[in-house]
Length: 157
Image (cartoon, helix red, strand yellow):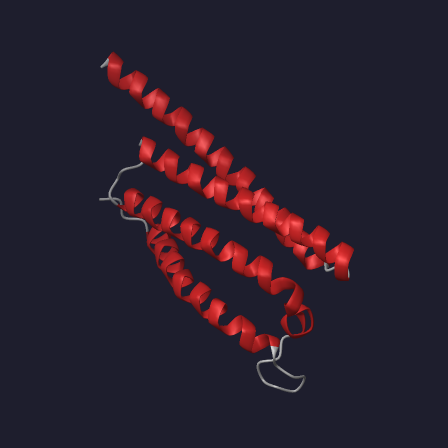
């Protein structure tokens, strides 16, 4: 068994994110109705929430799919299942989730900018999601190549 504390901490954080995302889904409409002076008042949500709520709820399923993929990937790593095609597939799922979230964010930014007003945060989030898709894709490609090298080495022995 693979024993790395950072993997365990990351696995815990991913599982914590299940609950945090569910809490955000419940809290968003409540936070939108907050008034200045309320302890739970967040300017971004209270002022711009009506523009952000639909894109947020559009990416929540992608968030859960990404979390499940990360959870499975970390479970595989803990079980010493590293150079495995299943992990490549999980990284593919993560890439697709990031790309789709970036698309939702980009389209949302354009719609918000054209119809209402510009909210730069939306495009910044979309750019971050797109960048994460690139990072995950690079890791996936490295893993794919490592699997090929491992299989070639296994054939030689």
